[in-house]
Amino acid sequence: MTTPLPADRYGARTRPRWLWWVVAAVGVSLGVAWAAWIAFQPRPVSAVVWGYDVVSNTRTDVILDVRRSDDDPVECTVYVQAEDHSVVGERTEPIAPSGTEKTRVTVSVETERRGVNGILRTCETSD
Image (cartoon, helix red, strand yellow):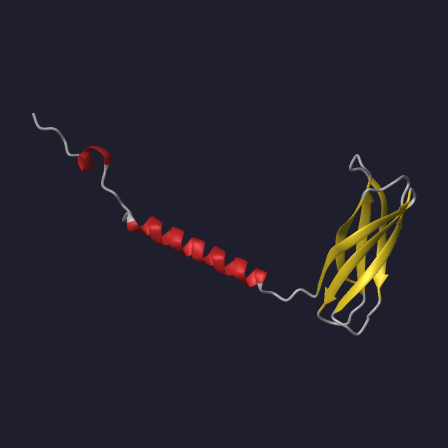
């Protein structure tokens, strides 16, 4: 009695083995290309928290560095957290066109109790 060959027992392979490597390589290439395209898109507005100053138990000043490519009006929303990480104040500040690409702005946030840090939520062009 002869032992059947594996191809007779299980069937022949229908796709070549290299096909999956090609599909994976194309998928990774497309992913990298998309990520690079997104990363190099010009951002109309970017902002960072330069610092904050806890002025009193009911007020914290958040200092922002705002960069914009166009001289459009911008709205930035900041919030202040207490020591237990709860939000104790929030404010959306309109930033008028300044004629320069980089602007430093101080946003005064009224708080319900003493804040310990200021955080930027969003900064985007306003219509």
